Image 1 (tube, one colour):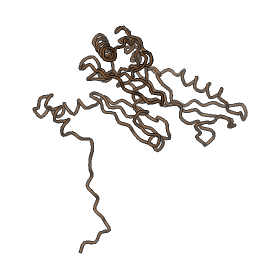
Image 2: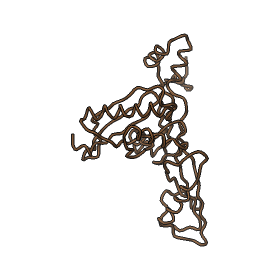
Image 3: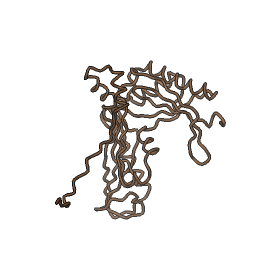
Image 4: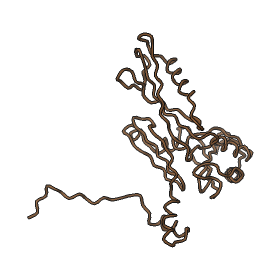
Length: 276
């Protein structure tokens, strides 16, 4: 299995269950999964956000304890995923005018990034920044270093979430006697795992339907272009089915057995075909 220090433990907070996974990175860069655990919960996470501090703390503690017991370790540091209803992207443009034609260097690019990072959103916090293109004249360039221009406009996608969102997660982890190793944006990690380089380059949308939320991530030209979390999910379908005088448990089973998001359109008639 390897040394305990080489084992990585990550925890995801879902609306219906809190899940933990432990793995070890192999020499070729792949991740070998060692253990998976989960704790069912229906009233601690709401729309992907921590709704009950005490119950979430207890669930995280139980999940990590299960992993520790299965692997015979005593990990105290966990990686956490950030997702939930308020997570979204905001576009920001930072223009910069020079006195004369100037050679663009990395120092200037860093200054533009610092200006963007200093923007304040009402009741929201920036958790990640994805630089987009830089406009020089009428051209859009992803790497403008080494070019000359009298002006430049940097475009950024800021991933933001409401204030206190990550703090509540860190508080629950700390109350469970654990330490947060790092916090990652869950939809971005999911896209990195599922989408190929070709899909990100040519353009695609990744739709992740959860119990109470649906996350949509749009990629084009290898970059995240848009991210939004919609407060609708699989439970809404179950609830709609239950309105037909069906118990929720039975409605859930009907959804899982017969429900499908795939629609096969009828083949369009051949307008050029001649009927005799």
